[in-house]
Image (tube, rainbow, N blue to C red):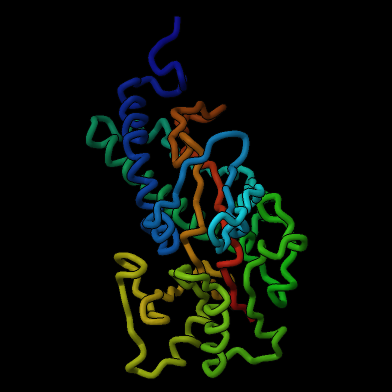
Length: 331
């Protein structure tokens, strides 16, 4: 007959296990919020309502790639254009998976009897896991998608390709080949390809080109992220009375410079070296799988160890619905 703690024979106290599991499950939503608010880019995407749950075998992102060609001026009984038009398609992205464990040993169970002691122990473990997940996600936002044998997130280096110019952008993103479809190419300003030395003198011209090439009507970049080199070039290119600092555009806790009067320029220590991204987050998404946004899986037995292991998992990917309105400045 099964005894208490049958899920993990090394833990005799079902009370201990129940408290740990229920507390971790209750913390899941707060964990997701804390990770989102830890990063200026994630916070901006969430603020736009673009952290959207994904379902199905893959993540499908609808794209509007062309204008409706049937619009026309007409007079009287002139025949209207009723021909079918194809203005929408879809990009398809694979799920990427992330996991981290909360582990508590049998000895720690013995040493932490009572609800308060258990909660304190669990709190320290969750804080440690949260810190690790924050750093992993922050790095993943810029990932190329090829690390860890192709298991890592397809972040900005995947969605917004490095190249010598926009015309030279190639590669397949979301199942659409950039070499075939010019509307699926991001803008690139490459200092090396332009034979220009990146400096405090040249940075604003490069930024202005990235800006002007990512505007379409009222659409324009709403956040700029940069590594330390290009951020400092921009900072030092400004006269003292131009160095407007702001902590509103990117959210509480993020101080940034401002470009074009109201666009936050953020230094991000996870941004790839010598890169600056001009991002229109109306068209950038984080798509967690349903039921997998930092979801605790419950207690798992640790084989041959006196320990309780509880995985916390995330699945999904980063996507875009318009690459043309994104840009990268690089050296």
